[in-house]
Image 1 (tube, rainbow, N blue to C red):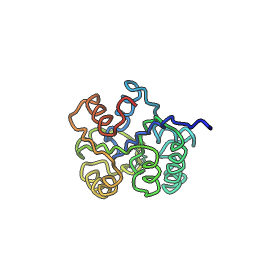
Image 2 (image 1 turned 120 degrees about the horizontal axis):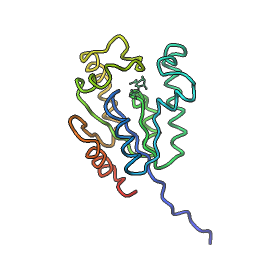
Image 3 (image 1 turned 90 degrees about the horizontal axis):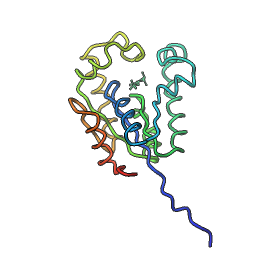
Length: 180
Ligand code: S3P
């Protein structure tokens, strides 16, 4: 009788949420403390294109960037045991959400607009905030995205005022990824 492959595929963890919600910090911690392989979508796209996110937006357009995100997610779907730090716009596309759901758990990180502002205010590689770097604009864009973010998420985790270690323990517990 043919031997069956019983090895279970380890789920990916997809971190989603608004720019500055803490995806990179959480991803770094899960990588260091829990041996998860790690990928930052923006970083990978910049490496592959040889351009910054701002340059991709200004020279090739946002639609081109969104296609790159979708293609990268498809490739990541073939991997396992990754923590993927998604760009803030990733959950806005239905096809991206489907792809992530098939291959892992989606974790939405939440933070108040004031906290987000403090974290991103000196950044110049976030073209959607260029020229709108204020709490009101951030709160408005967050509100526009809220429904899709919530619908995509398997788990929502608040980050304001919390230690990254505690946030990561909560994520692993609630995604059923502890010891896996
Ligand atoms: C974007 C978020 C950014 C980056 C791009 C667009 C968005 O990623 O992908 O500037 O649409 O919210 P971070 O969430 O990692 O900042």
